Length: 219
Image (cartoon, rainbow, N blue to C red; front, side, top):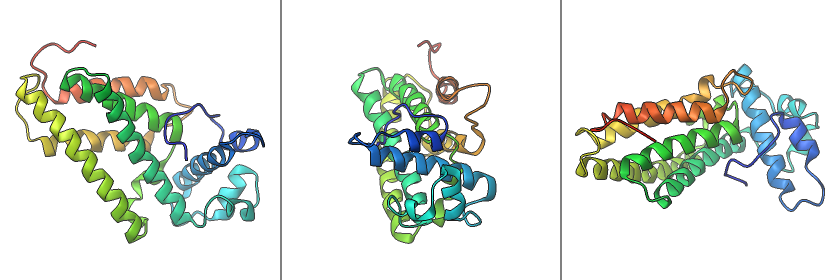
């Protein structure tokens, strides 16, 4: 599946039906459209009360058609979380590759992660349904999150060592700003007054401010 924030229609149904037959990534486009449609449906009624029939209706397709792309609601939930973690990993990879200072890397990571999730996943309240996954899927996601947290804590340690930010507990600091970032899915609206990229930039600035930079923050 495409994990990065590739351009896609704001309407999952339109993206699903517009995917050309000859596109090699047609299957990925449709799976992403399905995830976005499911996220909207789950946001209205909750994960447990939403049926695959309702998700199919969101896409204007039949339920048997969905089974070509997913096997169950549980798989949809896992894919939502897998994509979100992949986007966070990609955002940190990109931030580190740009080679800025540790604090700049944290700022770039926060902006990149929020931009990816709001653009590619859109309204995906289902990301708050963490423990509704199967135990096996939960373990897989938790392991990847632990590795991501470890990387972020190390960047914060580097920022403290270079006197870019005030001393802090890296573990709690990461919990704090990742909690805020992951909570965007609770309230973000694709039709809102501010788009995902705008929100991403604001969140990035708030993350930096929460870490008490030693010097005035400038991009």
